[in-house]
Length: 126
Image 1: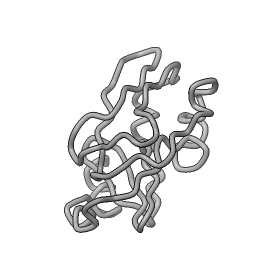
Image 2: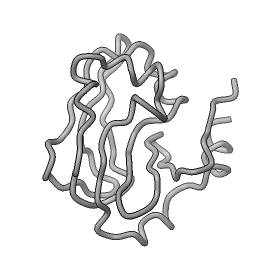
Image 3: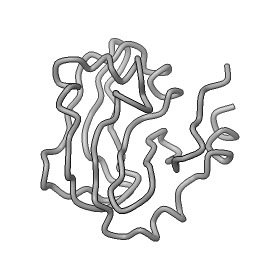
């Protein structure tokens, strides 16, 4: 199975992705949502809270499992995808678009260099 891995993001081994720049979006990969199955619940931090690269920031619950969400970047949460609270299946339907989780203002842009490139992430999931 070949999952879609957009080239405009960086990835964690635990299947979270982030865009790069001054304000980034964070989500989980198509591979991760496929492994989880139907997502039924999401727990996310609130706007203004801080997240730390490599540390848990929330939970995604599916019919199969409960999985911790790990932040690919450190910074301040500037937005939370509120649509997921009523429609968590957006993560399954569009993990790189409408199913995003957080927007974060990164505090350490150099952290992007420590994340997996799209090619490295593809190698990991194949």
